[in-house]
Image (cartoon, rainbow, N blue to C red; front, side, top):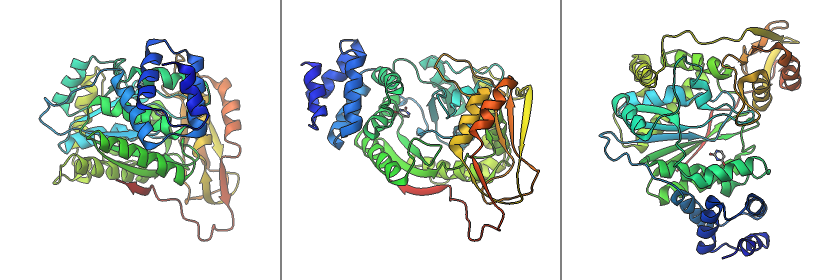
Length: 426
Ligand code: URA
């Protein structure tokens, strides 16, 4: 087998054979196929696509590049959730303990943020003492004793994807649906969950900017999961505006704890409950009531045990940024748009995210929203508060917010914000 013939096949819009796919993934993981050759192939895939059969084989080859976890010793059914990433998307934090409180085991192998979307591990690391890195044995122990674990995916899980994702990130080939679907699903299938709910984000703050692309990605991933015996369902959810009222690490933990305490912003509560119901249904748990588990404190109890089991202090004061800057509403009227991407870029520029994998993040940095689309604002009232430890970042962050919102001074007749859940694919 030679790599140039594999690249030429896809360059010329051909269909890769099973042998070609198995060989190229294995040879790339071993270092026999060079980065420049794999980037040529990734670009050919981005431009010319893949058949469902090619995507399925590509995914299987990535799973086979590493270890598979096994949760069969657990007494509870496993339920997992994956979001394709958005701004202010802190849902994993309240969701994992909530679903555990309702009877499932929730293994959440999560990542760090890169670019304008935040990472679950960065958020949780703002809790003093909390550890993201667990051995497989520690992970199983936390899962078994508390019902939920949120931790970093170990290096042994789909190593081909680790290498390929880093390469795609620097070669403009992240946005290929076959590559996104196989990347996400190879990790989830290797992780060994029995059921999986996908939160596929749509809108300016998401990878998928329009609903047709999101539907295609969702149905590709649902097909891959189902073929591998994982009960998989996808919700398409709105990411035109940030979720909740915060984007930034400690700011989002604070908001998640509010949700676990029975409060929090309506959209975060709605999406948390919608995903919880899907996860419980997929796991075969029929008689649980997630709204009750939020209201009666049982989800909060699991959160506290889960955080403590990973060295964190659930009672510790969360870090706050040293400096704030308030952006006020320039006119009175109805807020009709607050752009998720622009807010995500501002939070990132304030220090909540990183430009390179090895960059540190600021725990307290981010953006706080004082109004959501559909709400009335009054000229001069705070619209957004920017938080950072390094005030020289304000100017650049403010620039990203200059065209980020619209206020309709004429009463915004007929304006209704997007629903949170746009579609369901099973
Ligand atoms: N998340 C992943 O894990 N992989 C992708 O390709 C995109 C988002």
